[in-house]
Image (cartoon, rainbow, N blue to C red; front, top):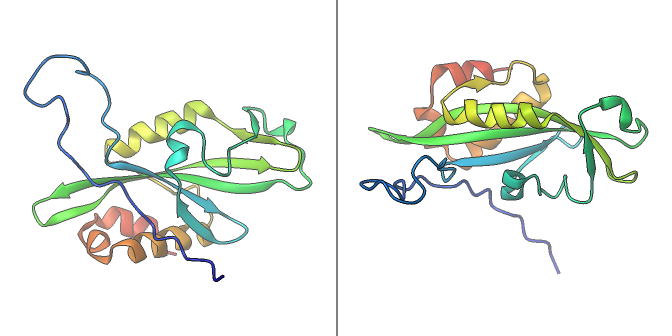
Length: 170
């Protein structure tokens, strides 16, 4: 049986559930317009993996992470980018508002990995605030990300900031 290609799915913006009242949930972050994109640097692929919202993406499962890169065995380790993509709705429609990338290294065979959890949380926050932080990414990964975002929605790409387009230009 032929394997079906998965369609990239981004979360679509909805109104905050606490609009208009001051009850339970006020002050909670609304993550409905944020999607985590995992880029496999070696393979040159990008996928939306909602599991990454809770550090449970396919890449992260069954891996013990350390904030010390030297604890990850080099042989068999694969580099990844976790990219937080925030979508907002403007006058003309939805667009890519914030895009921030975080580094991960995973050795599935040894079940060990490297990531900086504070960096991941801070970059998620920055993405939600509309920041573009991709300058530390390699050119190949920037192209993969740009092609992925364009392929998901050319309209959202066209409505996005020139800053994003320039940051992902290779």
